[in-house]
Length: 411
Image (cartoon, rainbow, N blue to C red):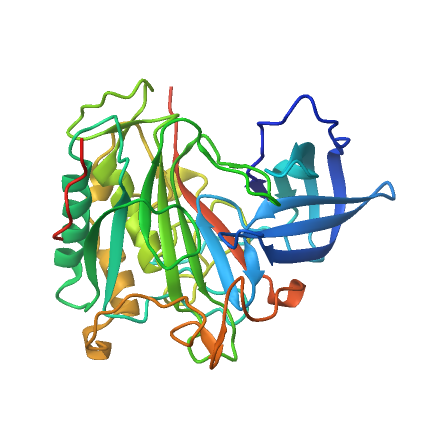
């Protein structure tokens, strides 16, 4: 059984009439339609279920595939597929433009149990071809939102240190160069700019005109959103073209060196959390299966072991930077382990060095996302998605509770 956390919009205008909540919904998924929002900054999907009591209920959630681009998020559950039997708690919500919609608080998908698998690094993959996600260039640029965080003073130093740690750890077998790109006024959206954003007021992505607010699992210390080419007929299938990282400064006190001005009781060491999320940015997935989505396979093609019981997992899984969970104040993920390094080097081996460093192009006139001259993938080009083109995966670094040459940010 796969239990999903689905982001929900919670800030609703009381003065407006709300659509009726569907409550507990049980049935089979009969349609999944993915689309770009009107602002073109994200992909959302409308999931329709034929319920056991004869109704049809539709809700909206983030993720999917449209215009030849897939959207994946770490630490957020993937979309159900047509044919899945689901149980969902569905509530009323509104888009930023005031349109009535529904979202699901949680979704459980019935699935057969599988035996625990072998141990090895895990790649994030496309839905259609199953190819591992990767960057085409020899380098990746990563900037920080100019607002930074109010909870520590040295976030830029930590970011540069994390990128340097990954570079040094993989330099013996990988060509990929991670570069800090200074500060920017960018946001989490599909624009080709890779940005780190600290969320300190609400652990949510704001609503857009035609999509509800996307509030994340409060146990998630961070979320990484990837946009990538998801078209088996495109020679650039599986190429990542945009990556954004959001850090949770609401339920967690973002810390450095054990110190934070945040008010939350649980410290989330920035280097620990960010090293994990940068692993997602490069194309790595978690080292154990938490029961959400289809069970992935590791780099050797073997099923990934279940996360539960944790006591049954070997240190190669639990000590890896890409292990799914972290504890308050944890710092061990800031040092990539052999499994993490092997994953990066399998995606970017020295022998395949492209010999160039350039930014991903998501424009309309060709470039890495083009399917034909002048026709771009994404919200302005390509055909959007029926179920056969659906891709979604959402993952996050969750809390397990027990008992460069960038320019400095103005202060």
